[in-house]
Length: 283
Image (cartoon, rainbow, N blue to C red; front, side, top):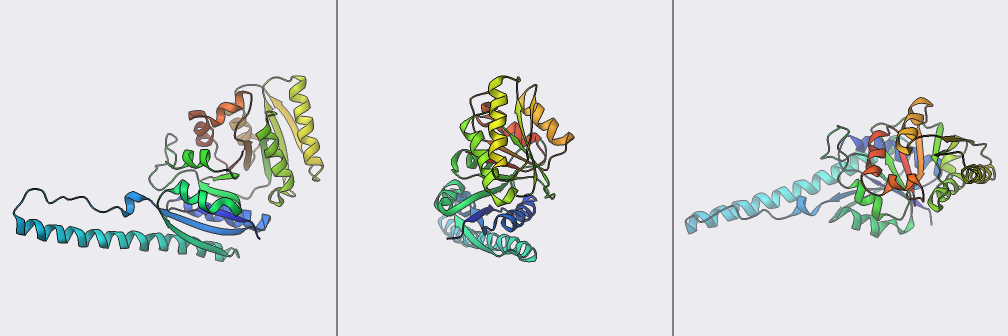
């Protein structure tokens, strides 16, 4: 069975970026794309009784009118969801990538959980339809998806840019090594320039960890650079991404050093918030 990429689209500005990233990922990694749009329970919920304590005849008429409006609204929400999916599919069609579409009612995390068994990766935009573009706001569903999905999670930046240089944040933890292994095994990263970085002191353990990571990548034919940077992870990595520059960041989702803090609570969102390139999170 062909592995698939689940790409989440919501009609926000980020949906175009999600589609562009999906086309890039699918083309390089030979993945089928499933575009998913989830209609939240609030969007399809029945309207509340706004009639109040008024005369029976008028109240009955108003209830009938509200019911008709609610039915019309529900149909419009479904039509809009289908239109979002069709527009997204059109972008992928233009890129030469065949995609299936899936419109789902209910909870986003539950929808992903039901579909991700045969998925290689889940793709989501950094911000959703309800979020503004201030640095203080991210998509309301992003953190929930980060914590819930067992698959590698690709967080798309606002706009797609061709990827040539990839930075791997490495702290020697099991998930960091799995991130290195994923880069080594996935055709998505074949032929790209890769650098592995540890933030902290130049201890023997850190040096050995980087050597192990370099050896794993070398086994896949990748001649990766390595470096140990001083400072705090979120600051050092963010600065390196911008100054090098790198077009993509890969990280494990937990660790046993300071990098662990990046994915438990607000610091995780802070990293995604400040990093302007797409990030792949590997458990």
